[in-house]
Amino acid sequence: MKAILKILFLQLAVSHIALGQQFYLRGEVRDEKGIALQNVNILQHSTGFIYRTGSQGGFGILSKNKTDTLTFSADGYYKETAIVSSDVFLTTQLKLIPVAASIRRDKLSSLTKDLSRESQRKWFMGDETYASIVENKFVETEHYPTTGLALNIDKASYSNIRRFISMNTVVPPDAVRLEEMLNYFNFGYTPPQGDDVFNVRSTLTSCPWNKENQLFFVNVCSKKINVDSLPPAHLVFLVDISGSMDIPNRLPLIKSAFHLLANNLREKDTVSIVVYGGVVGIMLQPTAGNEKEKINKAIDELEPGGSTPGASGISIAYGLAKNHYIKNGNNRVILATDGDFNVGVQTETELDELISRNRESGIYLTCIGVGMGNYKDSKIQTLARKGNGNFAYIDGYQEAEKVFLKEYTQTLYAVADDVYMNVNFNSDLVKEYRLIGFDNKVGAIADSLSVIEGGEIGSGHSLVAAFEIIPVVRSKGVVDTEKYFSEVSIQFRNPNESAVNFVTYKCPYDLLKFSDVNPAFRFATAVIMYGSLLRGSQYVKNADWDAVLLIAGESANREDIPQTQFVELAENTKNLYNKYKKKRRGRNKED
Image (tube, rainbow, N blue to C red; front, side):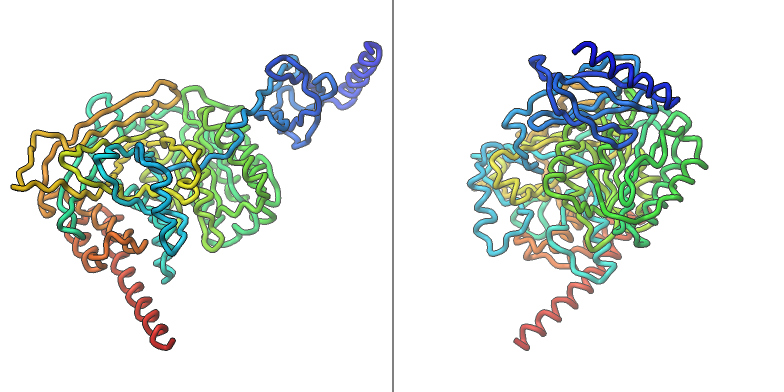
């Protein structure tokens, strides 16, 4: 046996000499008990070739590089990716996947403590329609005082809605996510004090669409990172160049957006480009941010064509991000796609698992959606949440400027990870409450194993969470204002750290007239009413488009372009939906 191995080694050595710049990568694969694993798949990243381990778990692979990246995979084991050097014998250990871990869990946007899934299922099973997103309903404070919600900076829903209205098309109700609409405006920003990561404040006022109820706002503002002190970044542009991207508002728009982003890069930053479509591979090796001509040339050379092997592209992008990982830096994959992953179910599951596992490696995922028609909004949103990242939709050059220029640090530099907020209401003051937005999908509620995970918050972000309140009615209308209305707690991790931090804030009972409320929160109210009307919410039956326009017109900041544009959008939406309603009435009369 030793003689045979010696002959094989000599043959490989001769081949190495004959081929010139060739290197020999050697190693073995074992399980957690040290037992050799046979027939483990080995993906060589530099070539895309797949090899397998031998009967003793060993392998030997020729490479044109002295160092290469290999990914090891076997049924029932977690995948492992490693950088291999020709002068080091590599021993790789594969870990068994527990039965529970192999089950795919849905993700919740919000979770009310102790409220059973059986109760929540009645929210949608009793309706005539089976919408994929279930609007949160009122819950009794006495039995369920605490609700938690995952915080993030996703804002794709608003620009996608705007795209529908610009096309004179009614908006699909499931495309409306109220928390993302509120995220879009970043209003009411108040910086945290000193070294604090968050500043929390609250507002309680009357509810415009139901005078007997109240509106409660929690505003969470994250600290701003000084541009001069931004850590070095390694950004991997992962670009879908498949045939479906061959439309002006898809790949050409993405190229324009990445040109804008490239102009922001510094010498200490690094950018790489990975493509998937007719070809899958590395279009631009890691390049310093000041080599703008080289970067822009690579962007200009992107051409569409072929199918959409999304899993392969993401594997390569994460491998590249790992190989050039910057310790204490900003390591991020930026996926730009119309979401048309035309791959099998098994591959999509593996893709989700790949994203989830890389979440723990310190690599963020920003998803940029473009296009129309086969734009897979929910798929890209899921990937962003699994990848500890954020999600934006670009419907034009102006939106690209907003995401990559005006909100550059907010989009690409996290100040907190796994951000999760609990709101605990005082049952002496609150009879029932309803979380506005952060609605869960039907599948997540139906799945008893679904979990809630916090999101990523970027630099200088202002987030608004809103609740509709049914107050406790006092016989004499007297309220003990010394009592706190609610208590807010936020848990989060600092980037690249494992320790969990907590921030608590007690919200005082201070009921304001709606007209006296900060304009930012009155404008937020208009956005909530607008989105609720688009969704056909049962809770805003007393509201109409004119009420939205009145509140938005009075409260919009005239120096804030997105806010003034919202007023125009609301006017266009009113006209479109009134025409649509007339047409529908006409059809009903004919029937």
